[in-house]
Every structure is written in structure tokens, then in C-alpha cells.
Length: 285
Ligand code: NDP
View 1 (cartoon, protein in one colour):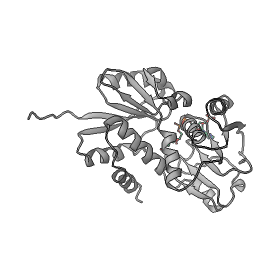
View 2: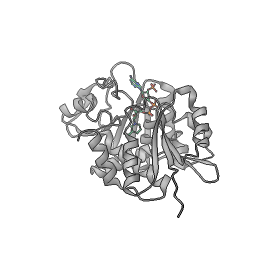
View 3: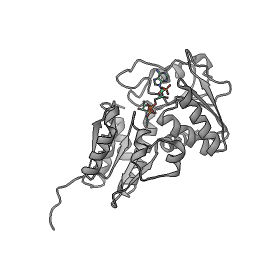
View 4: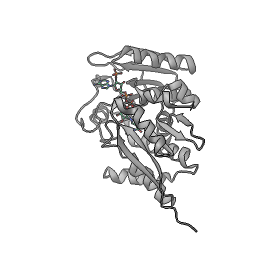
């Protein structure tokens, strides 16, 4: 049989991406399955997305992930969107099909909801407060609402983005959403069951940064989650744990959405244990 030295390419486009470990996780999964696939981690500045997407096509890549700041701007390059991606208004996973069309999906929120399920936390009837209204926050907000959350408070500095997320949840899901402005120190709404940092505050290299919230509003037993995964143990989670909260780090969400992406690209079941173990070893856990 003739040998094939060409690898199938996938990857991530974003800035910053230096601390993004998705590639090692996906490649561990490809290797375990004997697939000659590579995942490249590419720094793409905000004004260069169009050129980068032309490159994705020119390199015959099988798909890409988008991370900040490209999840919304990439929409114009999509030929078709999943229903979730349409409601969320952001894409984090592109599948490049054989016919040359590009399909956009959003797996962030699905991965987040799965990480709550894995930890035995139910969203049914829950009151959720989300810090942030960017791509990750939109995905998490919509998927939490679809998974049974009763009320969702969106706390964000930029009012237009915050209102837009609350409106999308109210228009497309049974949950009730409100927008709360964020200037100065944010107050956590009374009765919050699950608090989520879906901003990029605390992300490498600003590892000492913490979202400006009043931690006195964190009750013992509240579930407090961070989407930031690098570092795993963020000041936000440390402050919440000090008040008796149950904390969930961003790694669970990362591995779960990584598995969904793997399956979309390869059509095979992802070796989750291998991928999670690789991620944990990257973080010395
Ligand atoms: P976006 O750029 O789309 O959104 C960033 C959000 O952070 C905006 O709501 C912005 O508010 C807010 N923000 C930024 N700085 C501050 C600040 N100083 N105070 C308050 N709010 C602030 O980014 P993404 O949504 O794509 O990514 C957000 C984070 O989620 C990143 O850290 C990313 O690494 C992480 N992530 C984790 C995943 C995982 O699997 N664990 C998956 C996907 C993302 P405003 O609108 O007011 O500007």
C-alpha cells in the first residue's frame, strides 16, 4: 500500500493563545486512536481573521477552534450554523466539509453543562449568575437556560453585550434572564445557586487578576465556576472557596468541549480519559 505522509490539520486561532493547552489534549487523543492528525496553535491578531480563514481553506484544514477575540467575527465565514451557534451568535468550532463549505458549532456551553453534570450539580430550577457577556458567556448562558436553569443574571461592563445576551436567552429559552450593569464592585444577586466567571480576567499571563465582585455575597454551598483554565486555581476560585463555596475549575469544561470537537472533526468517539489525563499532566495535577 502506498504510504501517506500528509497529516490532517486542525487547530486554534486566537490571541492570546500561548497558554492554550487544547493542542496537546487533542493530539493525545489522535495518537491514542492511531490518527495522523495535527492540531496547530496559531496566534491571529484581531484584524487578521479574514486572512487566517483563507489560510484554513488553502491548507485544506479539517476544522478549527476559535478563541478570543474571534468567536463572533468568524460568523461571516460560515456557510451553515448549528441551531445553538445561531442562538448564541458565536462559533468556537468550525468543521470544514469535503464539499468546501464551513459549518459553525458552539461547544463551549455544552462542555460547561457537561462539567456540572459530571460534578453532580443540577441546573434544573437553578438561579445562575454569569460574569461576562462575550463568546464563552453567551454559550454558557444559552446552554444553562436550555438545560433547565430558572433564572439567569448577566453581569457585564458593556451594557449592549450584556443586554443582548439576556434578550437572546429570553427570546429562545424558557429561562428568565436579566442584565445587571457592572461598574466598580459587582454584587452577586441574592439567591444565586451557581456563579460563573465567564470573563477572561485571571487568564495567563495576568494570573493574579480577579474579577471585581463582592465575595461577601458568596454563601457556603454555592457552586462557583471559572472558565479560566490557565491557571487552574484562579484567585476567583480561591476567594470563593475561602467563603465555603464549592468550586469547579475550567479544566472540566475544556476537556468536555475538546471531546465534542474531536468527534465533530474525526467522526470517532473521543478517548476522554486519555485527553483529560494529558491535560492534567500539563498542569502538574
Ligand atoms: P470575549 O473576548 O468574547 O469576552 C470577554 C468578556 O470578558 C467580556 O464580557 C468582557 O466584558 C469581559 N471582561 C474582560 N475584561 C474584564 C474586566 N477587567 N472586568 C470585567 N469584565 C471583563 O472572550 P471569550 O468569551 O471568548 O473568553 C472568555 C474566557 O473564557 C477566556 O479566559 C477564555 O480562555 C475562557 N474560555 C474557557 C473555555 C474552557 O473550556 N474552559 C472555553 C472558552 C473560553 P465587556 O463585554 O464589558 O468588554
